Length: 160
Image 1 (cartoon, rainbow, N blue to C red):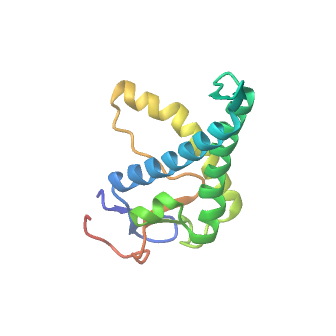
Image 2: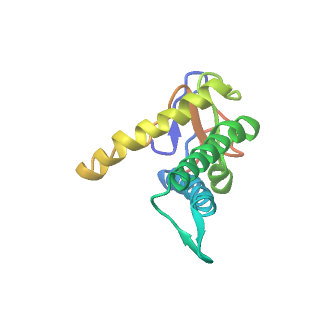
Image 3: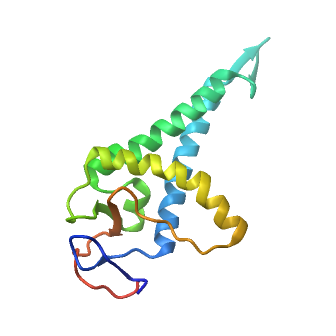
């Protein structure tokens, strides 16, 4: 059933809808991208003869963009999630993460693995899904499960 998912330690957990998951991912991606763009705008600005220019060929611009975007993504998906069990996007959409084996708090190493797996998923499965309309859903990775916030683990839930 779409509104329940099996875990290793619990019979069922409050499974989020695909819409909630995608919305949370889009919020997190937009936040990282906007932070990267802001850093790039600051780093790529130069003044020539009293005229302020943004040089898109500047290595400082691209370094700041990538560094800030990946840095904020790491802070959001690993450190904030370690502290609160949710990234900013998950907090806004009412989701949280837990360890699939026993419903406990995910370890820092598991969250780091999940963050790295997200890049692999984005590079491989998203283009494949878009090209073939495969219907493949986002999968939970490295023993970390996404569930709805406020719903006790192991309680069957109705579709939200």
